[in-house]
Length: 153
Image 1: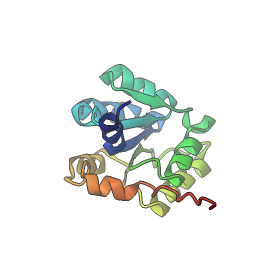
Image 2 (image 1 turned 180 degrees about the vertical axis):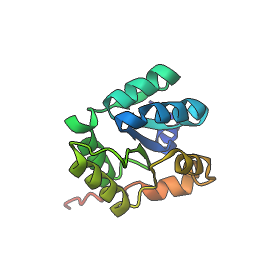
Image 3 (image 1 turned 180 degrees about the horizontal axis):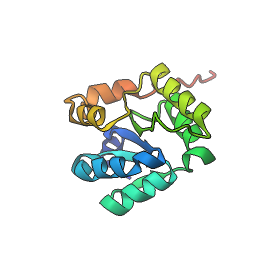
Image 4 (image 1 turned 120 degrees about the horizontal axis):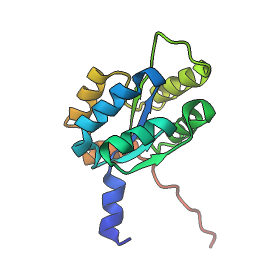
């Protein structure tokens, strides 16, 4: 990968796509509608959600484990390590989830790490259509600063 290509990859918004079972159709439809914009992003999704979005859109998506099997924890780690710029998480507020603790922890981490998060289609539309979504300065400020390496004399 040459320097120009590496800089391009570093400038892509990094987006997590997650949906509870009752919301997978809605997120898949949203992703299909926004596939042109999402094609310009580095996408990460939990198991079945990622597969369904890939099948509907053909977008390149890094698939993680399913949410209850550790996918939510993987996304949480990515949030904590500043490896995500945005999270689209369509969750079902009316259905109790066996991994509710993980869901709450994930939402808590998104707030703690100041990662813009959309939990429904209306908010996701506002987020993805914001002029700040692809703004290089905004994305650069969301990235961790390179660690300084101390060299001995």
